[in-house]
Length: 185
Ligand code: OFO
Image (cartoon, rainbow, N blue to C red; front, side, top):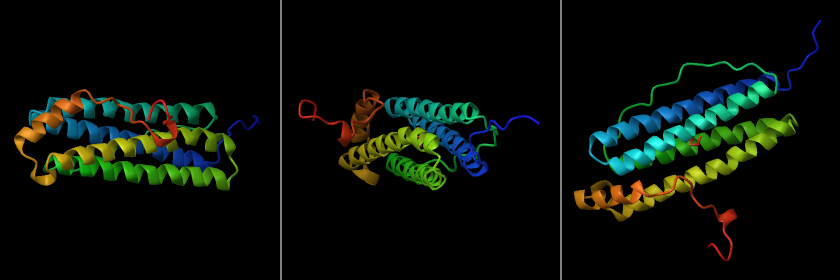
């Protein structure tokens, strides 16, 4: 008999494996939207979204590493397709916000599970994702604010042109309320 070295419950291992697929799915969404918008000629926005696809893949890898390090089994599953292309830049940003909010719900679900099981290692690991999701939602809300100023669903070509230029230089990370200081509001 070998000694049991798996430090994750079946339930948590399953939830974390699912979350890996969610992150991969989100990477596909960003890739699809970036390609769609690049085809429309908005390279600044496309670049921003391509960079973000990489972030989602990194999230997936982070979870994969964690599962392995806790001695549980990683199962690589099929990634669901990203769904239909957006119909406008406004629709694209709304869809991004929606998928980030859904992802937050699924992260919170794992936090709840880890708390119920008193698996503090997983709880602690997941706090990085809780903060990351706050950042991702802030970023998505910023996109919605920008497209609103540009005219929302009726945004005209010149406003979209400016938005495209703006997003080309937008940093990948948002500043969170908890990171704000008097010196750096
Ligand atoms: Fe993985 O952060 Fe967005 O979804």
